[in-house]
Amino acid sequence: MSEKPAKRDTLLFSPYKLRGVTFPNRIVLAPMQMYKTGPDGLANDWHFQHLTKYAIGGFGTVMTEALIVEPRGRSSYGDCGIWSDDHIAPLRRVSDFLHECGVVAAAQLHHVGPKASRQRPFEGLRPLGDAEAAKGETPWQPVSSSPGRSVHEYHEPRELTVDEIKQLVDVYAAAAKRVDKAGFDVLDIHAAHGYLIHSFLSPIANMRTDEYGGDINGRMRFALEIAEAVRAVWPSDKPILYRISCVDWRKDLDDRNDGWTIEDSIVLAGELKKRGIDMIDCSSGGIRAANSMMDYAKKRRKYERGHQVPYAEAIRREAEIPTMAVGVILDGPQAEAILQAGQADLIAIGREALFNPHWGLHAAQAIGADPDWAHWPPSYGWWLELRERIGIEDQTSK
Ligand SMILES: Cc1cc2nc3c(=O)[nH]c(=O)nc-3n(C[C@H](O)[C@H](O)[C@H](O)COP(=O)(O)O)c2cc1C
Image (cartoon, rainbow, N blue to C red):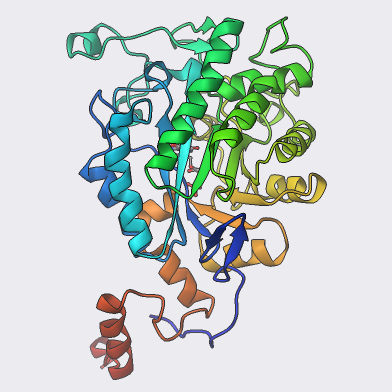
């Protein structure tokens, strides 16, 4: 290991309080779908090991993958569910272990809307068809704010009626109650990436002429009704995060500028705050696209580090609401710099956590928060500290 910096106080490893929940540090495992359930949507040992390993990897908060609020809101037959009480027990097992490790347990609520009935990403992300039906994975018709496919080969979604929209608001509230029963401390409502709630927000997707469409107030109505309904049933001492696509990226990707903008996001954040939402989880893109990452791949664009951080900063400053930054945040110094610059309050780590489940422990050493291995579980740290003290003679230099 390279020379360590001297011990210092950092923001990344300082606690943070929202309502009755104290986050032990600012690092959050980003929600990441595993596509590893059966058609029953029940979390299993895969999900247990996937999530709990981060609790010993220095993550102060571990967030589940998207938990689907009703079966037609699944992207694939591998999605994890929260649409029935049967889903509670295996998730409870996860939250119990997270708590045993002193880690905050967070869960995400989700409905994919127009992006339903697809293959798992690593199978191709194509719409389910005859081949999948023959294997028991029967396609179904997705629902959305309006007709119009996310990408041209997907199943055409059906427009939700006003009655169905109102029922869905209740479906989100019922799912939130189950997450509470499963012992989770924090909720994140997924309204990003071109999925159901985003399909209402974005003027590219929402063509409705009733009270759920039209100007920004109409397009925000569904998102705000969900916020109100979930806040009403989610315990008042537990925070709620709201994940939004801060911009639709149309200008960048299609050289058009007719999508949802950062100014719209600031208005939405302010309205969510009035309804008791505690933090905005700041992502981007996904409308009229398979997903944002596929767009990057297709356009052969490279990521810029922290490319969504400016959105978290703008919303935090303009709407005066805490934010979580996510997206190509790769190491401890970068995460610490974002917090020091006042651009966000929490930092979510996705793919870099898949690469390195001990990301948080390594970040602590890299920025001098843990020179003496105290953040590591003693079962690991005691040995590693001793090995470091003994030192290793470099045979190759002889
Ligand atoms: C395997 C995988 C699954 C994902 N599943 C979800 C999900 O369930 N919900 C969600 O909001 N975002 C999901 N995302 C997006 C991540 O939460 C995160 O926003 C994105 O990966 C960017 O952060 P990163 O650069 O640190 O990976 C997923 C990303 C990956 C790589």
